[in-house]
Amino acid sequence: MINDPRFNRLRLLLGDEMLSKIMSKRVILFGVGGVGSWCAESLVRSGICDITLVDADKVCTTNINRQLLATTSTIDGVKVEVMKRRLLDINPSACVTALEKRYNEESAPQFNLDEYDYVIDAIDSLADKALLILNACNSQTTLCASMGAALKVDSSRISTAEFWKVQGCPLAASLRRRFKKNKTIPSRKFQCVYSDEVFANRGEVIESDGSMIFGKVATNGTLCHTTAIFGLKLAELVIKDILKDE
Image 1 (tube, rainbow, N blue to C red):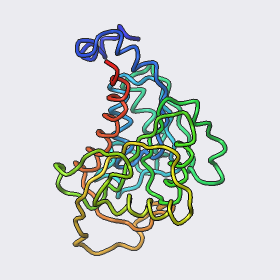
Image 2 (image 1 turned 120 degrees about the horizontal axis):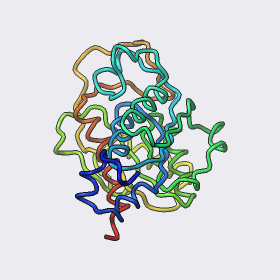
Image 3 (image 1 turned 90 degrees about the horizontal axis):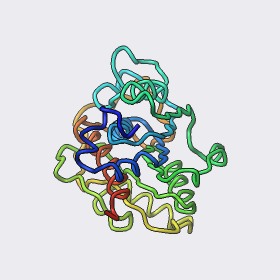
Image 4 (image 1 turned 45 degrees about the vertical axis):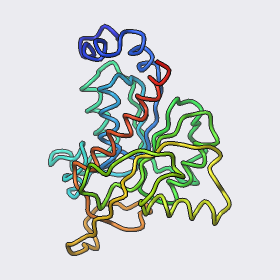
């Protein structure tokens, strides 16, 4: 697969050895929405050939403004299946596994996180996100997590940091309070994508727009360029970690 012309520019930049190293990694991504969909595509375009997608949601109209997989023609489609088709259209030789599941207390035992080199958290639900973080930190895998990507406008304020050093992000603060209250502190450090910007909603809150919330505390406004950059920065964390010894 390394000789596939799809990856000529990657070979030119990285060389055969490093491209082979990227192609050998296994990734599992939880959440393929506004952040996760862009992350998944960036990883596959960057040479990741074995990726598992986990999400229980379906595409709805309100996803179109920010989610890579959401178009008029994909409405009502299962998100992981829609994303799988797109990724295989990019690289037909990739191994893409689509799991229409929600990661929570009930389903967590079904996932052996040690099977993967990287676990990527792009989950919205606070409880599910906290559970995945704790379980991933107790495994041998490398965890990369997205903090809150909603209520952001200024892309220059999107950055990366170790979880306990993230500042100005309400979601990160809520997670830290939850961990401390429950006395369940993640067993090791992990890298996050975050922004310290909080741009308040200015429009009317729509109580029901047909989307599934899966434990989300609130529905907030979002922009494509900020959620996409969160996803691309997550992919960057993975690729940089693979290349870090070079």
